[in-house]
Length: 356
Ligand code: SF4
Image (cartoon, rainbow, N blue to C red; front, side, top):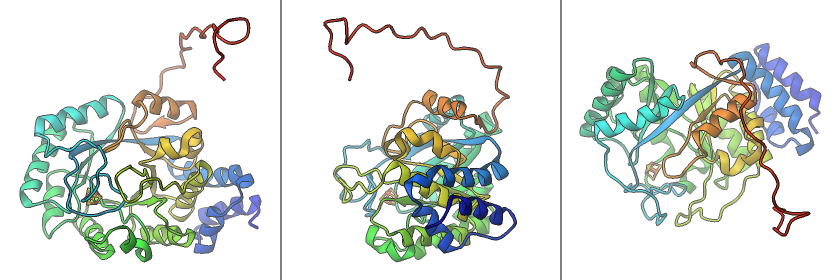
């Protein structure tokens, strides 16, 4: 069994320039739950070395929801999904601007503009470049990431020229598992788009979804593929098994397992932005704070088709764990919150049922 000291030694070796091996990654993933704090402490050293106490806060704007003809089995927007989600066609530019402004007001520094579908038409690229121009004119400091699906030749360059800073296209899972989760496009299609993004000079953002029936080895395979692809930011999603999709009632993840997956990502890709993405609240639950000691990024508020916790709760999570939002003003001195403790009016000594 890997000892706690060896997680610390692993972090030291990585900081000395010796990358983690696949065996190291598997050892992190398979660490005993008793070793969780040792794993977090070691991964946290890497996190603080490269990112200090900052958390990058991103905000999702779903520009077009549902109505997709692809069959990604994990996705509530996919062909054949009967999940009861919002479905709408492209937002207008002013609607996208309004949605983005809400996230920026809430503390986000990056807006992720997402649309459902296999990939954009050239007319879709026109729409998005208009939106990006409007957002950047009003919020010059904002970073914009686009996530529009598989790109055709020339589209990445057009987005870059419009001011798009980054492009997200997740590999989602290991190549050896990919065809089990989607049949309408290939792993190679996905890698091709990440290549186009890099070629155009945008920052590649590509990550994965855990909990899709993959093995430990396949999770490791996916992470090493992302290292190879030189993804700048790595969203780690935890499957949200929507009713009405092939993965409904699939529950493979426990909070401690999720923290280990994030820690593995940190050990394998120590200087990359590791983002806790979809499924954070549902799967990490009360370990969200612990996970922030490993990951350095999250989404504020809601996801594409599901609700997240309130943005204020996200910011409180960051503050309470001793972190600051990247790009925010220095925090004002702590002012005690004026919160009168709720007086007990139930349970012992009353006729009202206790809350236990
Ligand atoms: S992940 Fe994207 S391409 Fe796949 S079904 Fe969902 S919206 Fe469509």
